[in-house]
Length: 456
Image 1 (tube, helix red, strand yellow):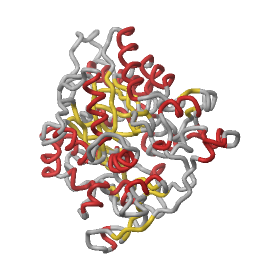
Image 2: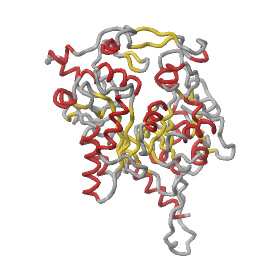
Image 3: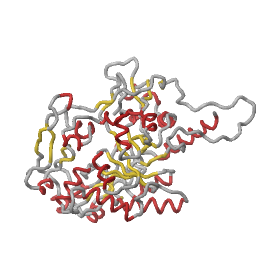
Image 4: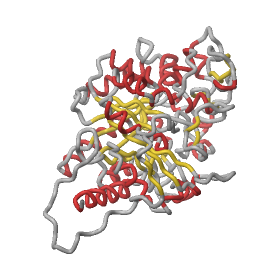
């Protein structure tokens, strides 16, 4: 998920660079207190965004995960939104339920849940752009089994070209059913994370997340922002239309607009961001009257440790999942997320959003020098600023990068197993915010960064 085409040759971070905090004074006594000079767009300290709550320690997108994140100092709490069968916005990362809930166990003793599993196969559709290897696969999988029957999308479980047959769809259950029947679990790095609360905490709605932020913020005497994603918008809209939600072609985004208005959050200075990987979703929201802040997420598929670039096109479905916005695939647009990182791409984003949310290696290129065959993340010894932050700031866009995780397997070798060093590398470049599964680590590293600035 990284491009180095715009990299500044003068900004190279190596293992020996200042990835450790600056030292003390010159022995002439304590220095006077100075105000830190942050390199963020607004000149304020970078924001720590709790990715799906404190998901490194608690089942993600549950009340406990969000409350623990706020207690640990999060400035914002992040959630993904999907529409339920009864047209309610629920906080859940994926459209399928087996990987972050205990629904498979519930189905063993609950015939209703067992019967909701989707087993139909999707259908292959030819791409509209030139079917050449440089553009990825010549066909993508669709859930529109019968082009003459909109409700046929309720049979297979195919999400943006990704096949999840033999799983349960979030759009087949009402919000109350999800609350009462299933419980949340950890998702990422699940083998390395605590399991004590798995299967014990109920799923919650997007409204619940806003209520948690409001209540906890009031108790703490500070504003807690909500950072909500319109997840898989094309899929959600097609499912919602089949479920008779709303009257137009965008019931998903219409529900988001209703949520903003209900909570009096539809203003530029409201403590909320609406994010999406798909520009069509954000553009529709703007046309529908969204005044709240919007962020264009930028995805990618793989690291290239030889030159530090990010890959987008693959020979499988990941091209459609993470290589380009799904609406571009449907429209026959063969560009990838790399196009969004150019000056022209950033200028286009500025017309409908207030910021970008890139993958970490799109901000700092990760490479192995000298390169060796089979090198992986653990071998990374060279970091290079791609100038994406500087270019985005020049375009008037904030930069919030994802996802910072503290497990050693998720850290580049240059950081020597210390997550603080990864945070510091990005803080020093002027990142405006970081999505992290481990709130306390992000806050601790920011404290170290502030101390470092004051010591200069």
